[in-house]
Image 1 (cartoon, one colour):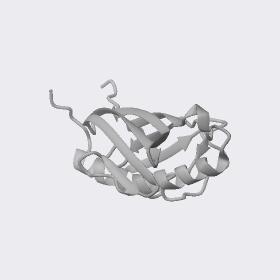
Image 2: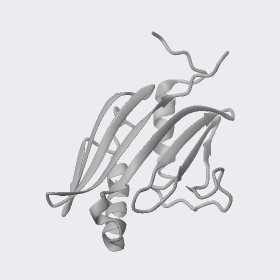
Image 3: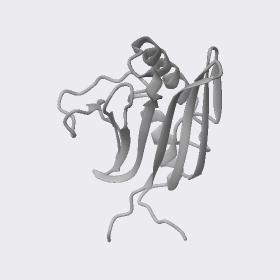
Image 4: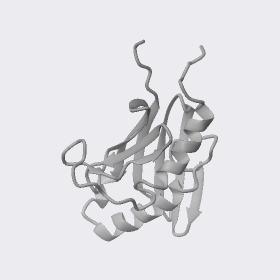
Length: 166
């Protein structure tokens, strides 16, 4: 089945990769009035007809969402849910270090798998692993972070194109 869009899928992928550098990963400024109260939402990134919105809630366990709009209409999203494993909740310094490492890993995203980070990334003492299936139109996966050999973080994600009624 061929999916028809008003934009080129390669352009969407390239935009998402650039836009992430202007969201959570790129230390973007948090906006004061998020679309969803209680969420941390970052300044929207716009480029031509594309707009990127990045938001999440929580700290140790922090579900979130990325949305791309094209000419004001949502056309792609990714939702994720997870965070520090329960036995590490309350250990603020480890959560901060893990978050910083996660940002490093997410900057290494593969254009052929532009969902989260690369399949693997190591910067001792941390290791990032990501397994996914699908493509930019419909995907799911799980990312994990290990401190030496101990899993400290796990997050599931799912996403793809948003198809509107004609």
